[in-house]
Image (tube, rainbow, N blue to C red):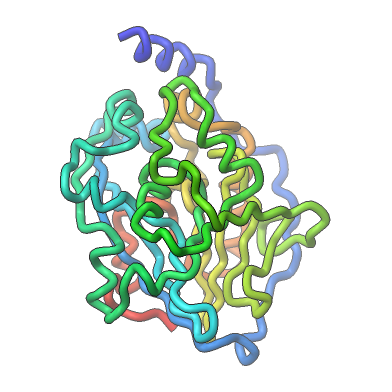
Length: 309
């Protein structure tokens, strides 16, 4: 009860998010598709959470939403299988109560239904956990990081300061660090001195061929990343939890005061990034922007095991 009261107090301290006075002008963006490797992308829903609309969106209704948890599976011709986010681990799919973010779920009024962990779905495309060479984490909240424990040989890529932040105890308690405690093969990506890319100021071309571009998008967490996947046939911008649902990008609409006050590391920075994403999507309508937990993603692209090229 005390924790809930503190959360409500913090929510009251988060002012109404209003549009900025101006949106920074975006640099021109383009990609040479003829030079890209013949990689493919699959969008894999591995679980769903449920939460009230008025928690997800400022000014929302009491309707309960179903919010999928997605893992993006990239097959690269030279780098192997690359996951963007890892979902929940096998242990959560076996026992839904074994959920590393249970306190967060309780405070925010979220319920969770376990699906099948990514490691158990890969055989459906004749791949295994051992084939996963890289995992890029948009951030280290439980529904994005938990599954890395099922891929012990993969190299994990995180944004600056994100790994240390995951160990900090905060309002919602110290997270369960068992999925990554003592993990070797972690690359802490840095963006100092890098050029803008798309809507964000810093970027890292992960494989040096333009296929996977990491972009610094802090706010939801200190080292939050957005990820651009460029394929010969199209580009897909994975926004992570900078935006949970499409309405966060289209309005843009802010997350609720409760979420901004109790969960976001720097909600103002995240809000600014929502506007950058909004402006980028408007200027580049051919780029598909994936919000972190949008229920209708399957209406825009074909989901697992369909292949995006």
